[in-house]
Length: 90
Figure 1 (cartoon, rainbow, N blue to C red):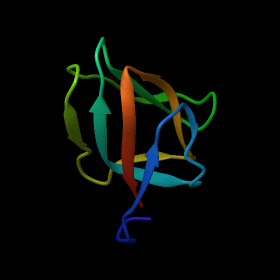
Figure 2: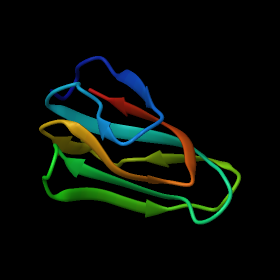
Figure 3: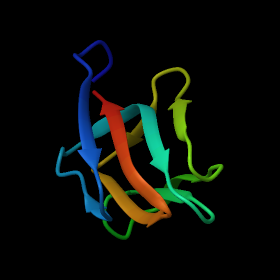
Figure 4: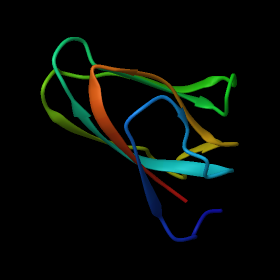
């Protein structure tokens, strides 16, 4: 998958991004008040591949180094105090 075009998907709730196998390259997060937290797993019920806490009421950009995080499907298992997340993948 390396070298393929980068795509983006905006999510506002937990669940599957329904993109199939992918490499997560970057994440943009718009957090709200409270204790914002984002957890991404390798498909539904898979291992946690990314678990991040953020500052409240801000926008955040998380760049994933090297070839990104390889998953069978991008699955948002926790979206706490976050208005939206945009996942860039290929």
